[in-house]
Length: 104
Image (cartoon, rainbow, N blue to C red):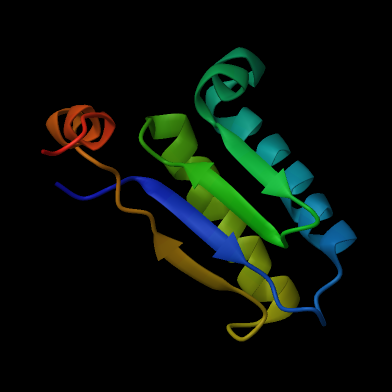
């Protein structure tokens, strides 16, 4: 099963304030497609300023559109060397339960 969670990482030469501005623009553009309420509910993302990372949940239609718009803005602003993006593998529910159990 493929994950719909994406992690973006930014090098030190990229201003995180500009990344934040790209997020704001992507939210506004996604609201134009889906409306404010749906974007608030479904376009989940987290910006870690000190860690220079952003995580986007693209598992919903609004989240997927947000992710596409966000990456387009990043490419235009910083180029293809201005960030790295990767899918984050999620553990399946059965695997998460096994992680919590001790092995004898």
